[in-house]
Length: 490
Image (cartoon, rainbow, N blue to C red):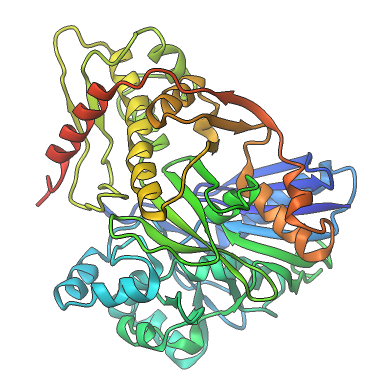
């Protein structure tokens, strides 16, 4: 047996066919466009996400040695999508998680004193990152689309909900507990949508999807809608929770970091939610069909891999992202250069949307190699910031950090990370752990695998990076630089 995993990311859709022993049998990928209509605004066209999904899946299925028995889904989280409940057409672009247009709405709610109650209920904070503030913006600024929501002609959800609607030909309007917990509309204590929060953000409860467990039969694909296939949708999770599952982080204290456009550090905290007073988010990791919820603490770092992309595309310092490792390796250190990559503000643990990217310590002796190395060091420092707060809040020891995502292939970065954390960094043989987690959840939900212990045995190590000497002076300079970069745009 095998599983078709759909990973609908921020810039493209990956489809994997995963075998019973955890190998990748085949893969497909299709990019879709990001649109930037104004500074601070990021949009997707939902139909383009769906067409990319069909194309990626078609490629993976054509290359597969056997037809999959079920489908799993993982997705970019927090992105707000609105679509017609009958035709499934989306009348307007989706507002992407990176979009900052609702900053004023957040500020107004914060000034009105709502943030403590929102944090109490959701484990999150008032930030444009999350879905509800985007929906409030739609209510205030797109009355035509919103009138369809209030009349029942249209529904709202995140990308997972939209994909399930398309896969099932409109038969199901659902989301899973992990995605729901990222909306600012989910009550962690009650384990469901909050009437209080729906009223605060002006979102009709009836327009929201039904919340389902992360594995079990969620729906069936409609052959007329999805490549002629009639398959159970057996699992679903937001991308970072799926990566935690794909990294076999099933025990409290297990930690993973996904190094992508941003970096997302999650620690499994077990069956009780752990609250953080230091800028971390409390979130649902996954929910079983019996209703048991595993929670996580999350540190969301907005710009890491994107900083390397900026060196390439914005400055022309490097020609390709992988070139950063070789060039940074030509110098012993950054020569005192510190780069704070707050290109879209700072996420955890600072949460400062007014911070801006800054480079300190430049001299006549500074070369592009020093700047590139400072960029890689910044990623390691950002992750250390989060892990140190995380372990203090959770009261858990971190035996090792499991790393995945594109930048985890950079050996120099992984060595710097191990040094800064003072614990080993483990890179798995399969680095596409987000899609792998979706496959694991779907297979667990439909009987391909019987237990998480069986899944744990499929995880294989590619390389373990042992910690060396930690450069505390460099980290101290980093903290000083972050302090100067904060509130820059105020």
